Length: 249
Image (cartoon, rainbow, N blue to C red; front, side, top):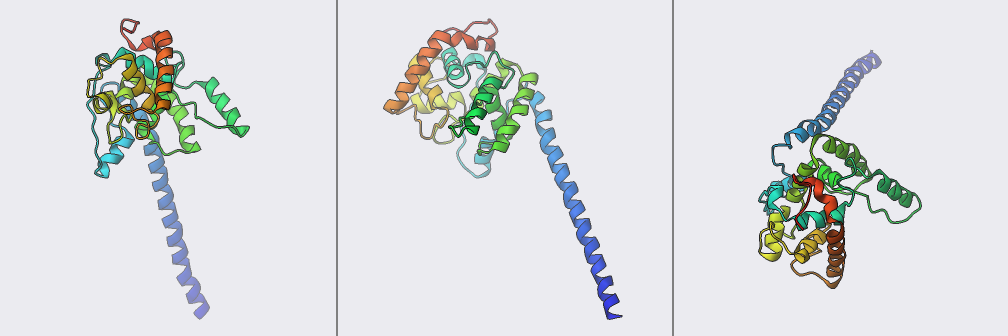
């Protein structure tokens, strides 16, 4: 009788445990579905609504400083647009959000044990900042590819670059977007920048906390000079973001 009672007592516990696991599984599936649906719903909305990035939200939620003043793409320097495109993604106007040739090269480098730089296009960076955040991982990199293809399908190149220039972290103390970055570095608006300042801002983008456009190191100036030369020579490759089809450089 005692054995029977013990068995009977154990059965409800096992049933309860299975029920809990099923509920957790369903909750995980709903969470996954929500995460998948979020970019699908928000990306078309961002054609007309100015978004806030995951890094910006993270700083806001933790009480850190966030400075961002949205500027329409026509209010931003054409030299800055050219410098950013030539520095970050020279094929921006030609690919569909992902530069697969560059990505294959980087995968080959990874498999061969050579340094892996990521091959992130501007569109991939927009997708990452809007939906994923900046914590490095191969999972995040894998998610960037389909997200970037979708972003490029739904949004125009003009809007993608406008979003990028307004959500990129561009200063050491919570400055986001070109307007805040130009003001923090040089005390000027981002609408009329010299080639030197535009190139310094573009070169600072990978890590503005270390790469200070306001007080550039000799190495940063050297890289900025290379970016300036490329932008002067090939800057019209970014002209797909203009209504006229040509940048005023």
